[in-house]
Length: 263
Image (cartoon, rainbow, N blue to C red; front, side):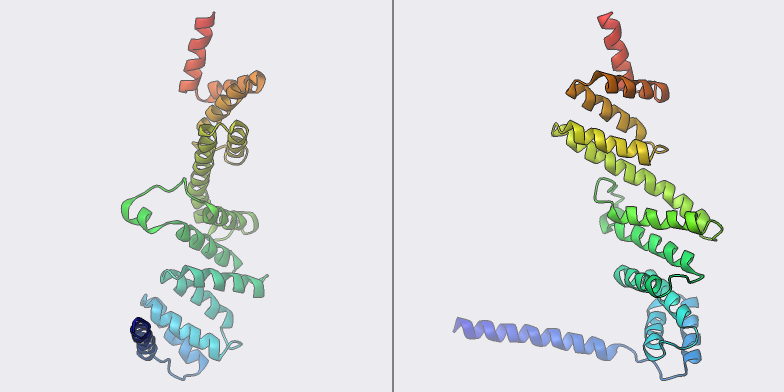
């Protein structure tokens, strides 16, 4: 009896899901059968009016029906933009990677890399950060790192691009964020007495992000790590750099007090 009841219940829910899916499909507006130029004009009007859902539907139809038609490359670029504005990050990234693969020498690659940088940056921002202002620099920064590489690619290969200035500004923000992430890992290693690993993480900050606010923390962690390992020479070298650049550091003042006391 229980098996029959479960079977009926399961069938009922499956029927609801199928019904829901079919209703969604039937409610989705069909794209009129028009010549490619007419469809592209409709898509352009939808983009201009910020109706990105309608724009993406028309562009999808245009791409499917006329993959080699006029404006085929521009259709792909517009589709990337429409997906991005709809917060369809997976579709945006998939279409970007496809475009780069099929058009490795396209004149608008600077725009495509810029859009990939923006998309990866947006993916890395979680719902709670946007809603409550939660700082998540200590979480996985893989998407931030990918975003940084894309913006850096624009500065390196397309320095005169109209997107170069904004890419540079975003890199400043990303460098600080990634550096703080490295510091959070170094601090985690210190707490677990993995001093060599903590020192190495601090070196990543000093070598790759020397113009961020995390340099001070990196030097302080290195000093603590070397001190715990009994390595006086590298400890004193790091302390000298810290004292030169951050004389108000608590670590510097503590070392000076210790020296006076011993004297």
